[in-house]
Image (cartoon, rainbow, N blue to C red; front, side, top):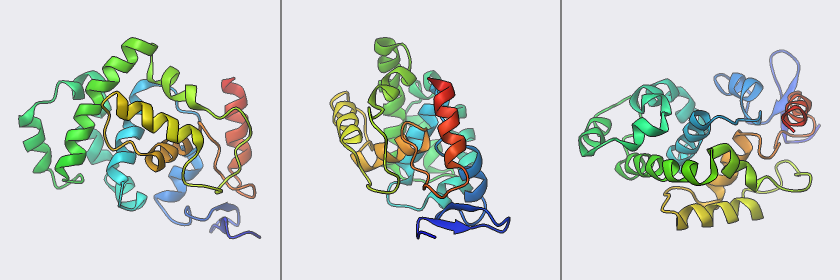
Length: 197
């Protein structure tokens, strides 16, 4: 067996990082499955930004707090947040209280409104960066597509959207299927991606 997978308590092999809860449930039910609605895509983009420099476990354990703090990641609502909301969020112990990341989430909501106006949806924009060929799992932390997406988003004024963060977004939302070949979930994600097409 490869180092890319770990055997779970149920005897099934999963990606190496999904050996305990809440990672296992997230891995089995969300990570890599096609995400197409604007609210979910915006949530994932925000959470990947907040995760920068931290463990994904930290984010998962605070996820419901983030949803409450950021109006369920409703793009239009977060885009209207003010300095008073920044102050409120900096006092919220249930989330990551990092001024730069909080301000970036609000800024990115405002930029997302523009992106939706231009492209019709976040899905149309983000999925436009799906690689043309097959992706090899766990072979990289960035890709030419994530570099291009990062560069374009930065030009549009987005923040905390570096190439590694955008590749993590692509992994999380199914734009690339990065489940290990021996992972029990890989085929399910492949099937979901075929159904999307």
